[in-house]
Image (cartoon, rainbow, N blue to C red):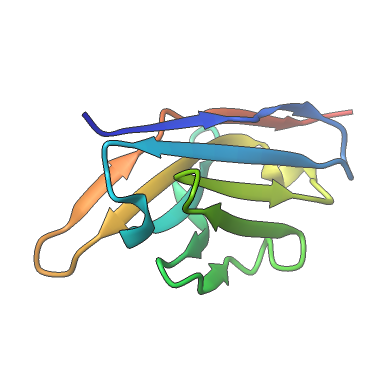
Length: 118
């Protein structure tokens, strides 16, 4: 059974930091590209950052310079370090593990709430 278990969300003041974790089981995690998405109330799920199996990273413009995606394949875990958080970062955050081209294997975490509020 494949699971992506997220942790690390919560309430933070503007300018603060949080680190999200996404722990995978049941897959060869090192072969997957991992993405973090956020979904604000009433809005679509939006890709925030990705890291490939080779460690190449990519970020949405809105988080460049503030967020850092990383992975530790020895722990089957990916992370999203979020710094300088602002109100627009308030959302449910989801991790995603994906691989393949012709046949896509894709799994989602359960989501974790991040609320930026004073």
